[in-house]
Amino acid sequence: MPDKPHKKLDAWKLSFEFVKEIYFVTEVFPSSEKFGLTSQLRRASVSIPTNIAEGAGRKSKKEFINFLSIALGSISEVDTLLLLSRDLKLIQPELTDELLIKLDVIGKLIFGLMKSLGYKSEA
Image (cartoon, rainbow, N blue to C red; front, side, top):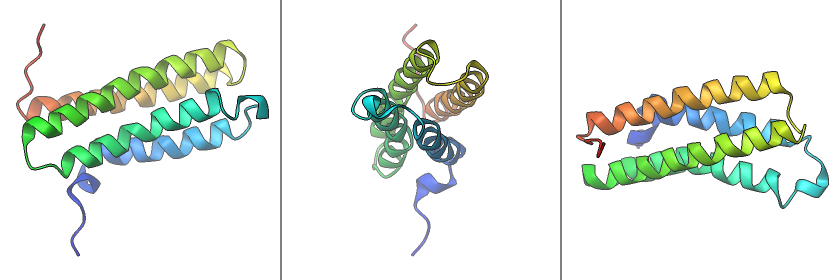
């Protein structure tokens, strides 16, 4: 069986690796955050590669762009949650910066993919 189309996308590859990093980082969060920041940060980060994958499996460019847009929304959510985690001293500032840089790269790849599919900014 051939590889799924999303597995060839750099945005998917990097976001998939990013999720694993988030899981390791949140492993040391206090147990009181199990259903709070830990869960929210994990779910939002998982949403990035899963939406890329789901969109890549769709039959139209319009649908794919929509799922990529959802992935970008999840990136904004993860960004906010990382900043909050840093401010609450759950993540070291240096690690937060590293994760935010990776997140920014993923966002740029997703936006570039959207443009390559014919997305035109509404601005």
